[in-house]
Length: 251
Ligand code: XBP
Ligand code: MG
Image (cartoon, rainbow, N blue to C red; front, side, top):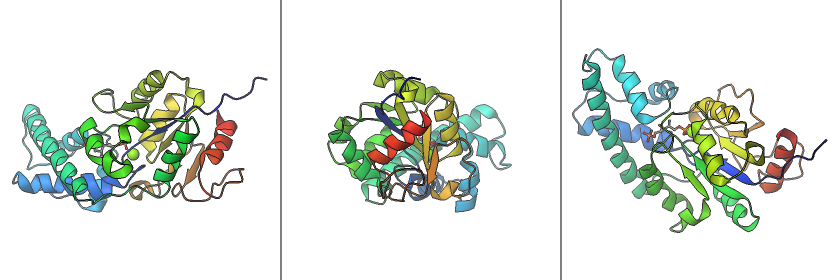
């Protein structure tokens, strides 16, 4: 029997995983965009939680507009409206981030800092656009954030949104590693499905909108990265030793 490959990379989802950007950022920004454009809609927490089943902000808007009797009846008009709302939403998201309204989730900064010293590559695999990363990451990881990540794969690179594995396959290609050498860290069922379909073991850190979701197929599920690992390891939190132990069990 051959030994399990070493853990070479952590591939992070962004929204809900690194920060509660859906609750504190995108939902608020969508509502500000609706108001700024004189549109009659506002999404409360429960509505947004249900809409999150559709990955991608633009796609989420289109799916919402298709079910609204007060939205344009012609598909091309709904698409134009969704593009306008989405563009404004992203501007509002950047403004929210600039105001300091979004912090990283527990343990994220610690784990990302640890990778640099231990030769574990870092990558991002997200359905959000690159502009949202450029706005958010300096606040989460400092001005030199881009030097920390060996690969950033966003909506512009991977148009087929999660649960499609495209975003993870591109991340692996850019990292130059095979799927068994990585662990994905995700918060959503669609993200888990995308990582698994790419052949990558996946750790779930539960976020507010997916607190009760079914994560069958995950290597493990924790409340956040500062929680005690619920698999066999000596670490008190999810650190690189804990992830190596999880990886050895699932690679
Ligand atoms: C994130 C998304 C994104 C964000 C908003 O999913 O679905 O659409 O909600 O970003 P994941 P955009 O965390 O699984 O990558 O509006 O830029 O799409
Ligand atoms: Mg997510």
